Structure formats: C-alpha cells, structure tokens
Length: 222
Image (cartoon, rainbow, N blue to C red; front, side, top):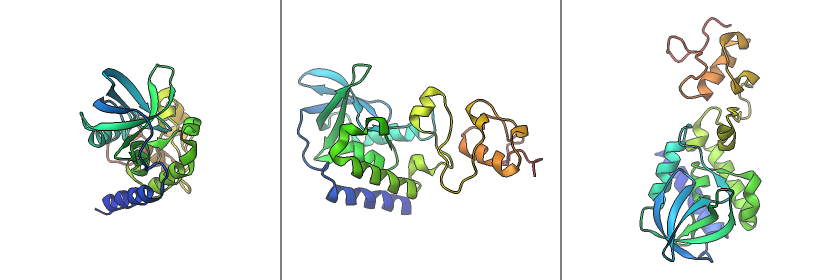
C-alpha cells in the first residue's frame, strides 16, 4: 500500500513538472504487442515495426524484475492503444529507438519512476532535454526500493546480457568479491556476512552457498 502510494506520488510529480509530459511531436501509431520491459511492436501507417524504448533499459526476462517489467509495459501499452512516438535513432538490430507517449505522458519516464527500468547512461543523450528528470526519477525509485531496486544487490541489465553478474552495491552494503563474476564457494569469504550478501543478491542461489536451503549462507563461517 505504501509502495503503491510512493509510485503514484513520484509519477504525479513528474507529470506536473517534466517537459517530456507534453503532447509528443511525432507519428501516431497503434500498439500491436509488447515484448520485454523495453520493446514493443506498433502499426504505423499500415506498417508493423519493432520499437526499442530510448534512454532506458529494463531487466531481461530471465533476471530478477524482468517478468514484472514486461508485465508492466503490457499494462501501460495494451494492444490497440494509440501512442505518439518521438523517434531517436535506429539501433544495430534495425529497431526504431523512440520515446513513447500516451496522452502526452512519457511511458519511458514512467517505467523509470516506478523502478521497472533504469536509465541507460550510454544512450541518455537521446533524451537530452529531459536528462535531469530521468536521473531524478531513477534516484527516487532507488531510494524507495521500488521493484528492480528492491533487490539487495541488483545487476544492471547491460551487465546481465554480457554475463557480468556484478551487482550494484548500495551505499553501506557489504562489498562483493570478484568471484561473483564466475563461481563462489564458502572458501572465498572471510565472514558469513560476506557470503550472505552474495546469497541475498543472486536469486536462486547460483553459487550454491545455502546447502540446507534455510536462507543462511555458509553457516560454518564466523
């Protein structure tokens, strides 16, 4: 209940103050389908095209938060809804990179404000006029532990795709050892707290640190 209120309040504030929340200048299209949390297909002037949401990156379907991000995009952009597109670029796969608006509201920005997507720093220039709004929305989502940011040590989507499963440690959290990029065992940790941070940060215990599945890693460590 409290988290829902925070999401609503954050987005209302951005809707009132953000220059992106004005009627988009661009082609009107109709949603045909959605994929993961940052891709969809639209019909524009009788042509079906794939669109990649610009300036943001959503967790992959096989990583924590990925299914929820995809489900949320489907809620925000149901099949048949009319959208406005502000084209940014074409990506290496030939997809149109764009900011998507519904009734003048940026869907890209809403996903960030709700913690279902993160700011894609390498491509944020595509939203230059609203750069600060994206960064502020992300910071507030992080501070409120919303969705993707509710994890103890979230892995950024671009690192997940490269197989570099290095979580982003929050301030004050236990530093993670280098073995998280390959495979850890209890001998890699000096204390139980270090092992616990890895167990908590990786869904499904891929490093097999919790042999008896009681939620406590490497119980023999001090």
